[in-house]
Image (cartoon, rainbow, N blue to C red):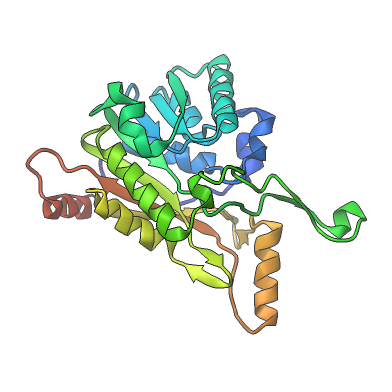
Length: 296
């Protein structure tokens, strides 16, 4: 909570599957856009204390919530898709069986209405931790011809939802508008000085790089939040003399195809962790930025 916060976090020392093994139910791997547990755990340890409240307005299978209750924090999540919400509840129950001391709850609802969904939590949260969707589908799981012996590539577990009203299906401007609304609603659940932490990375759309982190910074500011920090969360592992690749099949496949076309792109090896704050009563945005600089 105090002192210097590192600008780079080694959160990819273990692959995602290894980080979840035993700690989450096996069916959790079906979700295509899960937050890395090490990122969630580091954020919660850095910006909250035991007994405080953590909220995730787009909680998916409950990574933020599970890591919070394992650290003795209370947690509340909102999830648009009933199936993922039920899995988040099951993962919280699994955490309780493993000895997690925090309490958690999940509401299946539209996070754009979060002040009405969680009215009893207004002004109570120490931290909001979440991540926006990256479109209607992601890389998911893949089996190539080499793996299956069958021609072509088999792809599964790559869709958030088939519900066309889900934000993941919307155009980027509509997605950002909805995400801004979610952040503004979350601000009403935070106590003065509370933190909003968002994990996000750039992505390519029809070959063009979309600066989603930059767009999210603008969305947070439009929601009345003060942007105070940007941290690199590594998705690759750090070995003694080299980085350990954690990229998916499709990330590497697309990078190779781009190089063949003469476009030197690389697979993403980190996520941006964007930190915003709610100014304490009477504090200005300038004072918040100055305080953040002193902590650095």
